[in-house]
Image (cartoon, rainbow, N blue to C red; front, side, top):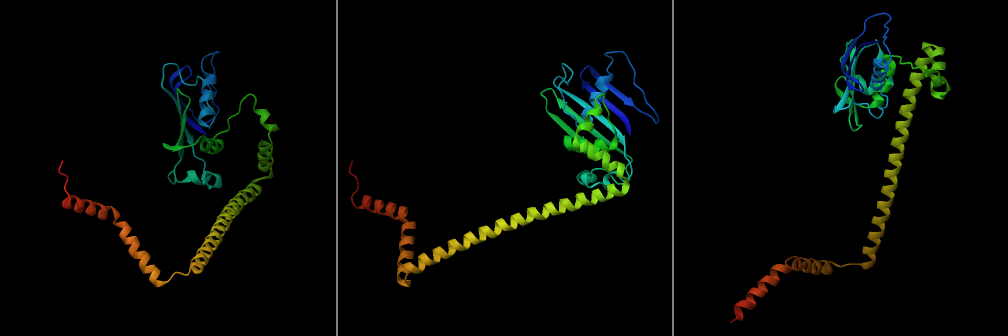
Length: 244
């Protein structure tokens, strides 16, 4: 249930606050009074996409905030697991917010913390039913049809569906982990092949301990090549100084 709705700089509304009580609430007014703007504000709050010109002319951003009554057991749903930690245990209300800049960028908030528009849709859809004049068109959408059918089947069916969702997520995670392990195994095989090839090259070359000592000495000498050149140049200058 929606308890409070605050709107700032949205279309023709500079600032307004709506407090709702229990029972039926009716908002009336003549054309242009702002009824549709309030509906648009609620749509934004529930994760809707802002339209061009959403921000009131002359303002830098629009802000919509809503306080909702928190139903018991709402966060038991696995789809809301990521949002569960944002709401204190035993809380009776939850606050959703949406900011829209004049440039069209939006920000979403749940309990004052950053969220996504998808989070608002997922959570808001469980807090309030928002129906428009063309809502019947949703019945042509397969996902909406499944929701109606699942709800009609009752609480037991919904519990089974939630358990299936969890099992599906676990199976998906296991498949992802399996693919990662297979990728690591392939990389390990490639590394082994490279090592075998390099060992074969070394064995074919057959280096001796004397060659190793000579190569080590040559490497050490080359490491100090610049210092040796500088020393040789200094010695040459000392033996045959430039008379100018």
